[in-house]
Every structure is written in structure tokens, then in C-alpha cells.
Amino acid sequence: MFSLSQVRHRYGRTIALELPHFEGAQGEQYLVLGPSGSGKTTLLHVMAGLVRPTEGTVVIAGQDLADLRDAALDRFRGRHIGIVFQRSHLLPTLTVEENLLMAQYLAGLDQVPARAQEVLRRLDVADTASAYPSELSTGEQQRVGIARAVMNRPRVLLADEPTSSLDDERAEQVIDLLTTQARDDGATLVITTHDKRVQSHMPHQRTLTLEDA
Image (cartoon, rainbow, N blue to C red):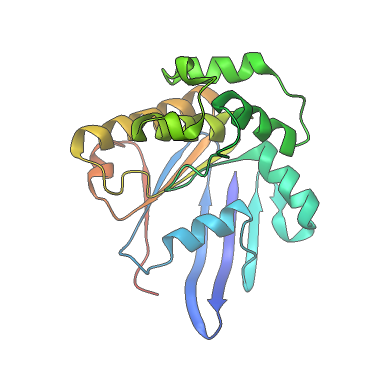
């Protein structure tokens, strides 16, 4: 489902990520651990095609991302990769439902309100459909962020530090939501985190540990 080989990324003269090999199978769960500065977020951005690595090969769902120009890469990402950021990044001038439909539009897919309602219902935030992001609680924003990420039934679901700054109860809820949604859609799940609490809530995960870059 994904394969990274001899990946290295630099910001200027600084090596932000150096990874000889990382691969995963469809429907499996993966945890990327490491301290701040070890390259976890850079890895997630490389896998999402948000950052093109300085060196190496990144293949997602059978597609070498280097072969896609920017517009085609955006469409591929929208259709096959779901991303849960540390902050929701919802568009403030759109309602929750419109934010989800925008995910379909940007991927070049038909906009299907019924799909948005289904995903919101699955995440227990159906009553927020007509609300604006500023009207949501932090917990609701997290759930809507996950809803947007799974809107197009991605083959790979990526989550960047989803439990940072959360107490134990909320952290457990977020991990449960991510694993459940990935399982329901048959997606490969990759979570980057420095929070070792996550490991106890993902008993079947495989783990990659990054050292300081």
C-alpha cells in the first residue's frame, strides 16, 4: 500500500528526515514514534505528497508520487490519502458540511451530501453539519477533521500527533475514532506521535522509531 525507499529530505543544509526503508500493507496500522525534531511530521508530509523529498522514492497505492505534477498530485492526494492535521485547518467561511463537500470537489469527485451526512453521523457530530468551525468545541473540531480526512474513503489515512495536548480520556477517544474509521474504510493507518500512550490503544500496530535528525 505504501513504500518509501532511501528517502532523505533537507531544509537548506539541515537533514530533516533520513529513512532507508518503510513500507506497509493495505488495512494495517502503523505507529511512527520519536522525539520532537526526529522528522515525524516531515515523514507524514512526504507520504502525503505535501513535501517532495530531496532524495528517494515514495510510492502510495501503487503510484510513484514523483511521476505526478502538482495538479495531478493534488487530485491523487484528495482521492487516495486522508490527512488529520494537529489543527483542523477547516475553512472558516464554510459550514461543516460544506468543508466535507469541498474535499470531494478538490479531488475532482462529485459532491455527495449524503456521504457527508453519513461520515458525520458515524463520528457522532451529525448535528454540526450547518455550523461554522468557530462554533465548534475542540472535540467537535477534532471529529470533523477526521470526518474530512475519511470523506473520500482514502486508501491511506495519515494522522500527525493527534493526541498532543490531550488528557488520557480524550486521547483514547481520538485513537479509537481513527482506528475505527480506518477499519471501516479498509484504509492503512499511519500515526506519527511522541505520545507513548498511543501504543496501549493500538495493540496490533507496527512501529517505526525515528531518532533525532
